[in-house]
Length: 306
Image 1: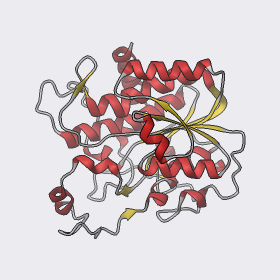
Image 2: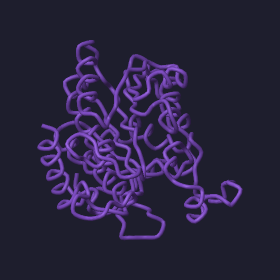
Image 3: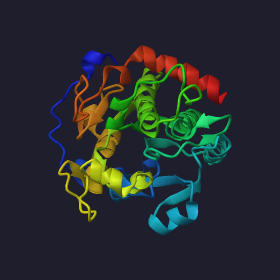
Image 4: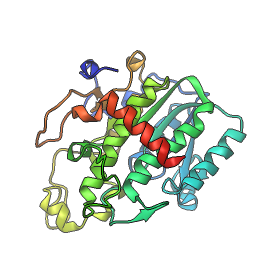
């Protein structure tokens, strides 16, 4: 992908489109999809929509008992913040001999308190990026030739490029918002590089949706952001429903409109435009779709997870 290819294609869908609408006329019978985080928030809505279209959905879950109560799908244990757990899930799946048609990396955490995992990794980068990096690479032998991988990024990538000299906030004070932004930039760069390596991949911004993802934000922060009023009522019209929020990742995973595309960042069921800094965080920043940065991050991630 070149950055010049990062522009709208006239998909016919938009902000208000739902997952079921973008799947209309698409038959996923006989297809196997893996949806991380597929039992909560927009991940749950994604799982349900894919299943209605005929797919068999596997939901890796950190809390499998809770997942089985939430979703009618195949559930397996996986903690993305724990590399040993990622290896164990992937090895079990590979041993089953099954093939993967669609993979949506929807699980994520946001603005968590400072937490270290593994060899001192910052939790958001470790979970949102490194966990999925290892998972997809371990499962690559099971991907069918025309498989698609969707990396769920966020407009939060506008907040931070990759902090090449201090990935894990060991030199500077921890900032939850910056750490989240860095992890979402990593998600976008992951798709760029995976696509360059021969697996069709896209990254997406699902939109603003109230889900358990915001559990680490206080009510005061939500009010200050203009999302809700003092009574907790939604007042921001730019928020989507879960059905609308799941649409872009479902579209990116299944739409024939993207069959000749390669590595683009998408939003509102469209390929996003390149953007300079803007208050709406619309579009995609150049650094999040830079092939050189994507290759650099891939090499660094290989070294960290080796």
